[in-house]
Length: 277
Length: 277
Image (tube, rainbow over all chains, first blue to last red; front, side):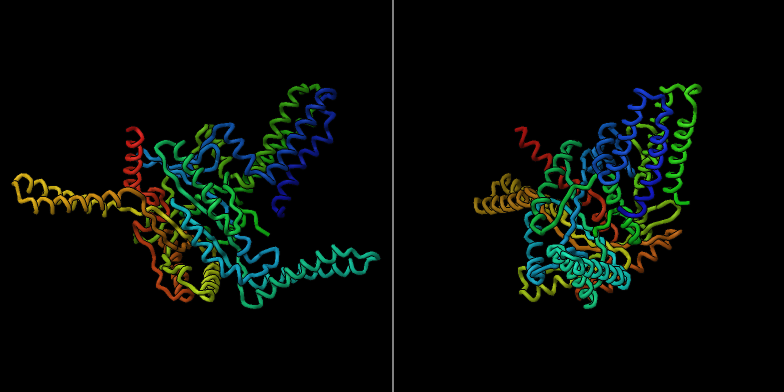
């Protein structure tokens, strides 16, 4: 959870605390139960919205039957999972999938064993995946270089913290071997990342997503064709060790805008999407 | 003040005012039932305040329009610049210009040995880490627009069929008739083969954006970034990238250019006729 989320949560939850402290002012008896239930529901909403707004938002919009027009001739359906455009009676439905290539992103959490083998296999695996797809799609990577010194300082800070934890555990009366091994593994991962920066590999932040468009004579036909295409993409690109999930809600709207107006600063990407750490 | 913060404080303020009034008012002035209703309204504004973190772009239009079909924008999402080589989008009072750079890379992993494959993977890593500002790299597979080619085939076929009809009418020698019929059959088969299925084409391009207070300022800055990107691409791959113009840009953003309307509508019509018969 980042700092901005915490600030929003604190201010909004503060009101729940005020109501809880003054619950007796609602008349007591059955009313107290109603107030407690309302507070519980509100707390559940705050927590669910924090971690899973991509579930709650489409559900609310579907239930209320609300659709959006993000720009002229375009429509975001009530399921919030596709953008529709009607061109001369044909419906074009565009959907998005996330594609986080963990193995190829600098901020990998585990040491890549056999990295040379993976680099060797990557181009051929990519071409084979592409050959099995027979409909239009786009594979997008939004990449932004990060400040080397800032990233290096951050990594060295993390390494120092892990080394401090390790020394604490080693000095304890009964040092736990599995905890020691775990901390040492983390130190090795961080050290590998520092070494890669030293070898002039630049740290980058990336956002990867796949976009596909299907066409149909009706909205439903286009939506069904799109669902079929996204499933095929998940199968075809899954061999690349890629986590592919359908994008819904506000992120769909953001990616739609990125189609004709890519972000100009790293912050614009970071504020819209949760950072992969 | 940032619009998002303004919306958050507005909803939070409303929520605080309603809830504080609700809890502080004695039961003699406001009945317990009304207190519960006011609490529900207060919590609703609290939920809106929390939701405004990511959904400011939706909340105000929903509150203002109060319909099932919410219009976020009634304008075209972008337009081509006067120089025909950039897309321009209005963002509030500013202009955002996007330039697309084609990367002419025609290599296949099947033609590479192991060292070349590893080298190619490293080149891709260098490509995505070219700049501190975000760059979007896209591999796009789209349906080829064969309209012009099909038109020429249709014209040729028409000419050959006319020739056959004239020879038949003149009672020409059998040898000439067979030759004409053979020609017509060949062109008919070619036309059917080309028209039978979709053809796909793949293109790789990068896109960069810049913001300016005037259109020409935004397009100039976007072109500057594009030139830097082109230098980087040339240095990494040793190819000559070029800026996409006119119709080629629309292929990168418009779904009806990704799947040409004329090509797909003819094929869908044919499929429908086959289903009916």
